[in-house]
Length: 315
Image 1 (cartoon, helix red, strand yellow):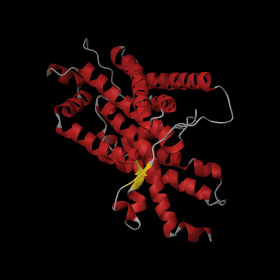
Image 2: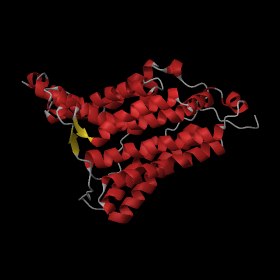
Image 3: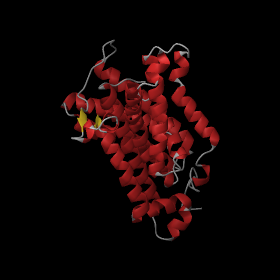
Image 4: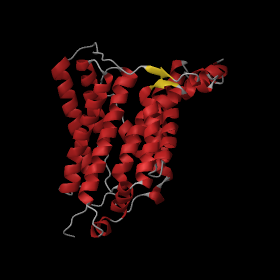
């Protein structure tokens, strides 16, 4: 009986629609990380930037009543955390992995402190205004495709638009070509008159804005509240999305949908009370997929040459 339900049209439609919705925070964070890594900086601190951005977005919507202002505050909060990482890695040439871990720890501590200082410790979670579902006229009524593709929150459509925008910026603009040059050979780029520091700083801020937007998506697009476990490793999955997508926005979209499908599948199986597989294993399915992707080494050949390599003009 369970397998018949899993193969039903209603289940498949709900599964694919959920996969798209769950993939979008990964996609948004991944798009920002693409800019950061293509400039030569690995920022695993996006996990913390997403958490802090989610809190900023929630507080912004909670106090103003506007989810759009919440989105703005969330993006600024994410950029603030990424700026700390940028200063340590670009200006001080600190190890990028160590500084990313430091940012994650800082973000977690500051976020929990601020939340408890404002709301205290309570079993009831405060709620803020979130983003409503926007049904695209006519297209949302198309059988099967309508519920899957055209009945989502506005941030889903915005995220898909960002894929096109990021692809154009990285491949069709002078700024994008300079970012690629900085990430491949910063010293050669410097001799060509490209300011490596400013381009890497700009990409870090872009990555932070995207991470904050992704965190706000989780807070206002999925829960309408904030919890200290709201990100739950999605920042690290976003880094895997970048690798699996070969540092390409379109590839990141495909990778995000894969991880989103894995997450949606385990949630729907639990909703069906599928007891054959332990629920703990089901909850770990998206992270298992992440590990398997990392083990395959997909995208390794496309890694920017100067990724994780500190740059100083004195060299």
